[in-house]
Image 1 (cartoon, rainbow, N blue to C red):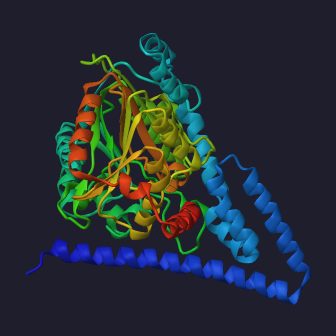
Image 2: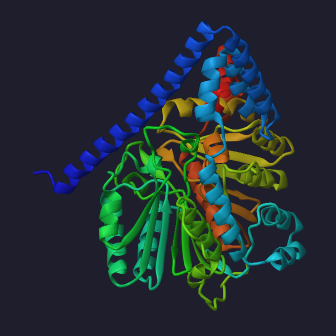
Image 3: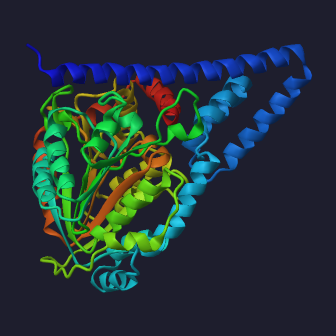
Length: 519
């Protein structure tokens, strides 16, 4: 006899998929209806053709003038100029990067209240400058341009397997005394989350403030709409980021792709994994799943707390009082075991500073001996591609690891379409043959590393809310380097295969790369 959980789980998946498809169909119908109306009006009133063409030209000029790379602009420009009515409607519904005004105002308001909570740590970067100026400059970019502080009183532990990170995470959660903050792109109400749910329920009953935050699109096929009510009934405060509605709006294109857990302001976890079975190899939809994570102790946890509270409060219109947040920043006397430097950061689609992409390019531009990267999707801008190829051309050992078994076949084809230009310049490409690699990490020259949620694709780099960490001087960097060395042994190198391509394949891949910013 099937268990109740199994039956309920299948029902939730069906309901979630139905809701997702309903929203998708509604969006298509809205675009089609507006397109039909415009077509009808232009046919009945010829003067509107001139107006439509003028509007199309104005938007094309606006797109061209935006401070984004040409790869993001060209598909939209070509679509709008070729099919003005369809292109205009599709761009206004999907392509515009800005949020609706109400959401934008809430984010600005929340940022104004929360940003002063970040400590002034300029002396940390100056101290690092005396040890390694090149690395310090990478930290300085995040400090000066993005406003994120660096910390020198923290410890980092790296987990080469998401399941190990998850078990350690649950151990730390059981110790929580004051608050637990959790933010994840995807939550699946199944075996992996069931064990976590029991811990959260128990800590909430013990008086711990527990908050759980997830993205609607990321979780829509995993949980039902009554999930929030069930969490609230167990004393767990629960919010959903950017819920899908039948009435489509531009902000729906922006998702919260971040993953983090903060415990008592003392411990934080982040990495590539979500709270779903496949991330811990309980299920195997795409072969063996490879993901990684890190645990942070010490002063740097303060930045994670601020990042969580900013997003938690920005999605609702609430009165914000800076004084009320002070209780989440306990005065903890912590003495780090290692003398490393650590900087957590986040990236937002609501400005034109592409922090995630710039961090990757800074690492490549500063690399002297090697630079290794993992990403589940490789759909990159001309600027990032040039950073990869220039590093390889000057003799740096540049390697990228992508999946061997795809989760989305069309995206996998797009990923492979970028191999050729990189391989021809000397970048080495590996595919993880046991299955799907979801980790988003990099390490360079044994001295700088990143671990977070930022994929090397347009969605992560331009459309999603993301987060990452930059580190120097920790044993975790050596552990990450070892993880790469072990990973290469499990991969198939495909560099030579894509270095020499037929003309037909080149043309096909060029077409895929042309439309990839729209994916």
